[in-house]
Image (cartoon, rainbow, N blue to C red; front, side, top):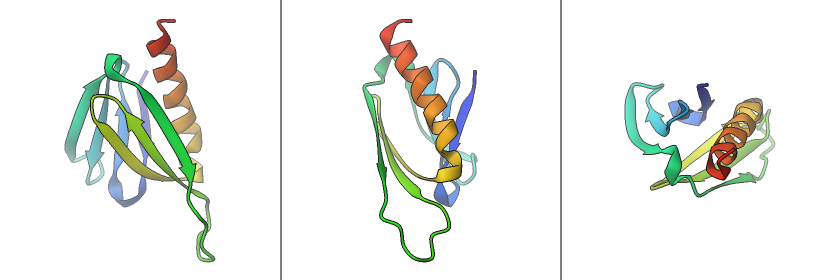
Length: 94
């Protein structure tokens, strides 16, 4: 099952069932890929809203062999939640 979480500025994190990768430039440039077995944790923190913000924004830190960071909008939160469920399920061996 592929899960893609799209962030601001054309960045994204993609999970393909075996690895987690970060892409820039709307998927044109892969900047890192880690096996799922190296997953350690994920932290999601809401960013302070500004008056001009239409949606809540979240800062995401995903720790594997490397740390991937991404800022997402509220509309991407369901994809992020699915990514977290899949990674935690695989990390626990279920």
